[in-house]
Amino acid sequence: MENASARKQRAMRITTLLEEAYPESAGLCSLHAQNDFELLVAARLSAQCTDARVNLVTPALFARYPNPQAFAEADVTEVEQLVRTCGFHHTKAKDLVAMSQQLCARHTGTIPESMEALTALQGVGRKIANLIRGDVFGLPAVVADTHVIRITNLLGLAESRTPANVEAQLRKLLNPATSNDFCHRCVLHGRAVCVARRPQCAACVLCNECMFASPR
Image 1 (cartoon, one colour):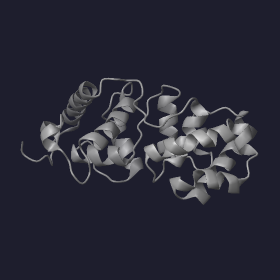
Image 2 (cartoon, rainbow, N blue to C red):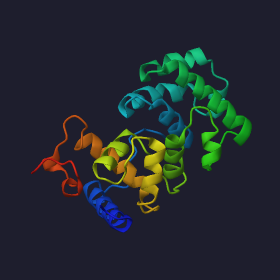
Image 3 (cartoon, helix red, strand yellow):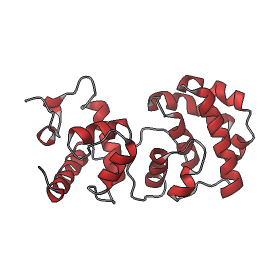
């Protein structure tokens, strides 16, 4: 069985392979956002929805509500109509308005940096909080989304389907300075190559590190 040191070394190799396959560090996040608040809103909308769909919805949403103050005063039913195609629009609209009200009341409309303050906002869990901490504040972050969970389990870097467990396991293996980009690259790889129902193992740069890869 692979010991902790060997697994950490393999995590470093996998990180390097992903960096070589997806070298651009800018634009790794596929959600379109002009500022930290827009990223926070887009991230909440992306739950159980594709980023591509969110990117179609947010231009009109941000044109109508350009900042936390505007969102805090919004009519929830109007927000529902604007985000309807993202799914779960009742819950998401309610969360966005309440979250904005909390931002204005507790943080003068600015996005907080700490995990505790972020997860105290309505609709914000650790996945979204890690995204904000990594992309906005440049802090070490592990965003355990579905692609990250699936791919790191295939690679033997994680042994759980629970986001919190995967996050904790990856934090022990990944370089904090590159952990956020590692997660973004896993998402890109999961969409382009290691697709859940039709993995392209022959074209995968991680094939030799994967326990479930089909023979070349």
